[in-house]
Length: 356
Ligand SMILES: [Zn+2]
Image (cartoon, rainbow, N blue to C red; front, side, top):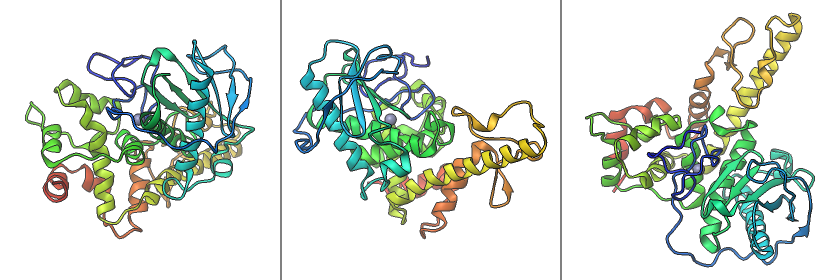
């Protein structure tokens, strides 16, 4: 488990080592719910039923669920009231439907994600997690103490990870995607906070004299550089969203970000198809069927097993950049990942040219 004293795990401040799944390789979230709770969305139109099935997450494994909506079932590790279970599963259903809608992912749960009443997502409510949450491909783990707008905020953030991960078709988004993009998207779709110019400057300038800009945070490990430097952790996710908002300022849309996810899936599936075909036609030239893993990207540089896109061979680490550049080339933004990762470009155009 990678949570340490420098890393705030879960959506608030408690450091549960099991709360990975959110955005990156066992990294956890360091997001903050709003301080005040307002009324949440009106879930009175969401129906639920009594529902008993085996729970599978670490925290809830071995237990049974109690209620279900169309796309979720819910159970708990502890003594959580029926009212709380029902409130959370209904709020999750409404968050999920909102996120799938045209203003956000614009996907069909059944046909695009293979999630429906026969293939529900799991909600494990663990009171020990307090106000924390984490998103996985097959559902979420969440504490029992959230309600109203704070509950909606956490659900919107974590379910963005869940939906994105299901589009990618991997156990974790980090298998194909990058941390800044995953957490930026979850922030864009949850509370849409960005940094001010002075906040961004204080975050990216390291005490060592170096600089770390948000689009260079491909993984949790890169983010830890800020933590070791004593940066304000509440700036991280708004910094990632700032990159997305800058992209939108230049002409990108939310739909483009979703297309990047689908483009990554297309590249991945193309690689798997090619590898399976080559494996078959050569009588199993490689010793293993690595192309079907849920926890690894399809990647091979050996003849016949290359990851290719548009006729060019790419490394699996570059799938995100290839997908980003491909989608951005069609929206008039003129933006590339190389630009966003370039420190001088970022300081001149985002910090000094975009932020206030
Ligand atoms: Zn997250």
